[in-house]
Amino acid sequence: MWGLYIHIPFCLKKCRYCSFYSVPVYNSPVAKYLGALVKELDFVALDNPAFDTIYIGGGTPSVVDPAMLSRSVDKIAERLQIGALKEFTIEANPCSLNREKLEQYKALGINRISIGVQSLNDEELAFLGRSHTEKEAIKSIELSAKIGFSNISVDIIYGIPGQNLSTFEKTLAKIVRLPVSHISAYSLSYEEGTPLFESVRLGEIKPVNPAYEAKLYRFLQDFLDGAGFHQYEISSFARNGFKAIHNIKYWQRESYLGLGASATSTDYTKNLRWTNIPNIFTYINSPMPVRHTERIDLKESIIEYIMLSLRLTRGISTAEFNSKFGFKIEGYVPEKLVQDGYLRFERGRLFIPPEKMFVSNEIISSIIDNVESELIQLYNPS
Image (cartoon, rainbow, N blue to C red; front, side, top):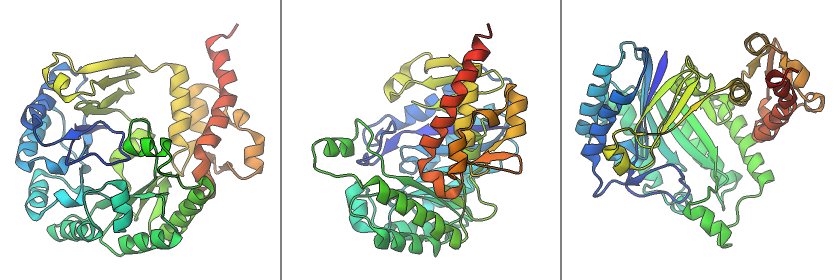
């Protein structure tokens, strides 16, 4: 089944590290934008697929009036085959959540809340440019559970300048004692075009040493596993039965429809991907919101399959890969990576062991470099 992603690009303010497309909610044409989400379906040529997940992301969807959001979602649902939803997620920030909103989310059918906590240390939150405090973050989680949400996910960031094992442990210890079922943990990145990147460029901020960041990541893995949160993807940890169904679709290359400015869609049944215009005003007024469309050829499919599958702790089924692409991946895995413990072959699967996940990008790149020669033969058999 397909997944549906709805992008709500509005925020109270942009965080210092954020590189996603978003705009201030104040003085923005929110109602027109929500109407354009429904209108976008006029331009989507789908073969009436069934959807079993919805994910409302941003931005900060929780800054939008929930009644207005509900009307748009209802209209979207009327035009799509959404009859057997397994998971319906909305992203939220602690300072924009309250009892009334949570009750309206519940009435809309939302069954999963993803809260952007990032840290439970007020100094770290101030550094990141977050609008909430530790106290507000804890209150938002507890209130969500009180309203009846049993599937609560939180985002956290590690590798914040000034953060150490002690402060990080305190954040993790507080989170696992809360009614949380899923944790997404990301290293702080310095993306070009963000205020944080500029501060690094000017020498105002010194990023955390990669070796220490790796130490924080290993501590995170061990701590969360001990607390009953089992890792299933590079950045994702869940209690039993609470893996993010929608997100797994991306990593398993299942089709998804993205609505909204800057949203991407991928139809794997047609090997087609398209991305919308990253501007709310152009998106609202354009007769056609799509900015870019591409065909996913065989080479891209193989590379994408390797990259996404190895993000998951379960890794790649060698039999599935060989059947799907017509050659054995075993012959293109650098032997030294296996010998040194960066990759493992077990029970018909190729995967990155947990202790090596922090350098997964380098590991995956090594495999892809080796596979490139096979891709050349596929395209130029002579």
